[in-house]
Image 1 (cartoon, rainbow, N blue to C red):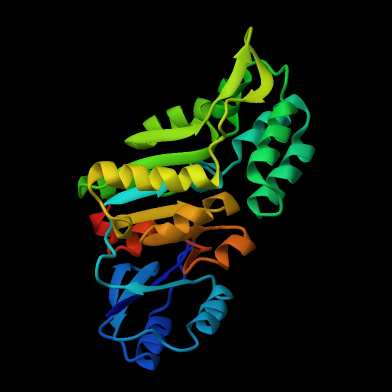
Image 2: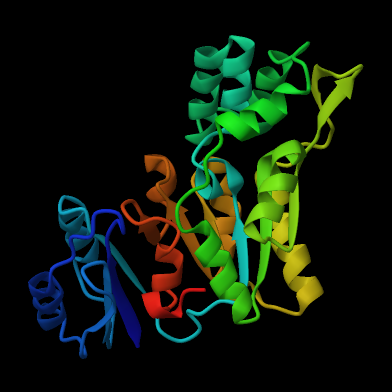
Length: 290
């Protein structure tokens, strides 16, 4: 059995009952269940439908996300999340660069790296080098004035943890940010790169080895082994090319507002919903949210 989930942006809910019923009837689905009025609904089907990606594309024009996944085991016991442009709405290194006066240059490199056009590790070294001499205190300024949490993050983590799940934040960004973001959102642990500092100033270097794509995969393997979980029990979420390894290995790999080249390689693509979408696709209703 498979479960079909339809969802929209909670801030602009636009899911119509007629649309849900039409698709359910076309695919011979079971009774529709509304997870949240006008926002998210699901129904079961016996087999994967043909032409589902064309339907997905058509629904994108209507600002509706479509996810189809096996019903069995869809409620996960571990969340493995990227930070930049996933749990928060910004890229931390871009915001630091903006404070240093190199915003556009660094942002351009970040965009190419996240789209898989550049080697992640080399691109990170190049961008960090441009921050040399920046006062470390600027990090606090960026955290307070420039960083905003992605909507739904608190509910996602609190609800999964209330059901016994484990939450890990694994970022190609920096510990100066992940430590605080993880604590604020309720993650059980966090991993990231460490900016090197001398006399209160950034040296323009980062500690080696750099936490990139391979390290995110290693984190998934290590944490699941430690907790006695299987990879199928993990939901991973990210947006960039350096997330593809963990997204492919996890039982549910969610491309959240991802770069097109990244989303194209994932079966679960959320382009309109926020982080609460990760609860809906596990079968949680709005009333279940913590």
